[in-house]
Length: 470
Image (cartoon, rainbow, N blue to C red; front, side, top):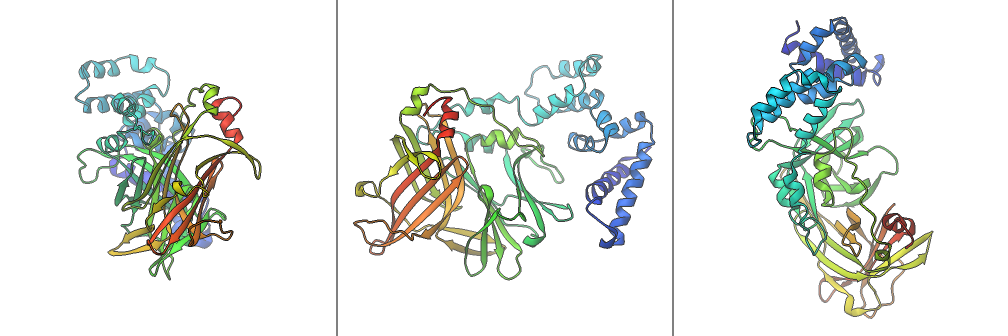
């Protein structure tokens, strides 16, 4: 019988060999080819073992390893989904939660003949939901209390801290090898959190194929060697794909690249090594996205119930925050706002929060920038920051939620304004909507003034949201 040490070596070799084997060729080195052959040889030995012995081996695995090994082949999938294995793990998980009443009765029921009467995968689903906090209704109740200013759950930060939710980055190189990095800094705003990673041995940018962002639920009192209890995929980005990257800014030490979905990567000048990574996460469904997905699949929220069609003709609320990982730069709320149709590159509806012709609406804004720290060094990238934008319908349901990095450009077509000064523009757009902001730099005040703020949405989005005409 293979003992725990042999089992660990088998799993490691299986992962290195089978996942990377198809990508490697003999030209890449005899060592890699040897690892592939060794993994395949060990796998063939295990496949010749009786099912009873393989089940005994699997009984030494934790839930995370048992879940992963079920993807090896059909035989392993069938055996790894055995109710006998998962019922034991489920009973052990329940026993840890001493606040649950009548734990002994649950364990008795799990160990009885009722285990095999349940359909295949029944206890596995129960355990995974338990580990993800799916049945912990306390945080769901807490999220029902809304912040009237932002329209987001008022206790989001409290729940995130109480559940010990953090976020980690996984980088995968061209050979399929993964490196995991834990967060080093978080900055909470009213409706978003900015997460930074700046510690560790970072690779060169051109060797990284993809980036994955996971929410993790850490133990309340972690012990050395403890693994996170759960990983929930939030985003996955291909870093080498053309069109997914744009130059964002630079200072004397780093240059910053922006990828899709608001991920920014700082690179040391001269060697293209990663210095830091930043992501801005909107509070909308953030706890669900950080808990209820799996390692490979993100959480998919259920569609909300349709709202009365009359709401689509009434006022919207727009809440916008400009900030960086250190401080808030600007926070404004506009309500009510009313739509009007525009025909520009398709049919859109428009919300004008600040009209450049109305001087009384103009808002002063301090200089904004993106400060960073990494490996004892620090710097500041000028004229860029984070934007968190929330648009609510009249029923105060989220209509459009955006958390992204934005950059200021000099405006080519200058607006005719009473105030003289250099004009800058900030643009953001995705499939759900567009944002345009115009700033004027007032030298005598050493401030920017926000003189225009416009959002636009496809009419199809409005129809889909309200299940009718806009």
